[in-house]
Image (cartoon, rainbow, N blue to C red; front, side, top):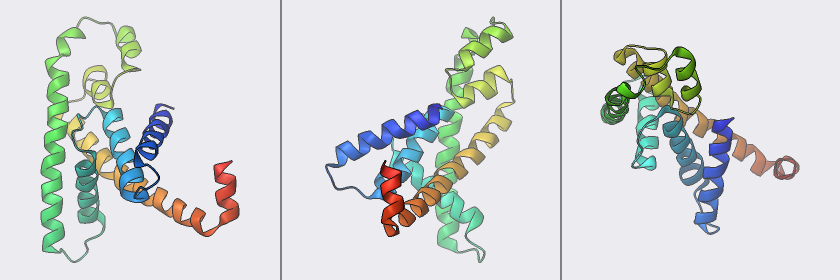
Length: 171
């Protein structure tokens, strides 16, 4: 439910700020996916466009480069380094604040966790090892933005070619 609410809020804010002209894929779909992904996971986002590009580069490296293109490999490695740094920073912040939660009962932690990030829930509540949290968040972040961008772009393309469906979607 939170993701739906955050997505809608981000999309409306971006459309309002666009003043009638916006690149639907890059400036609306990918940016909304980037901002919502980071908020949900607990990543401190400074540049949502760069975050989206890192995810796209990693996705291309993992799923769209059967011939091992050097440029795609380099872009994927750069995206990987940035994403890993962002995740490690978020994990560090949670570990540095762990003292505030050490004395809480599992029931108290469960209540707090409802309003906290995925990294908090995995690291503090579930007590996952740091490396496993990093791997989990890395995998989810790598898939979230490219998958949502591709899916939403395909939906938009279909709606634009089918006016009756677009009218139903707007209703």
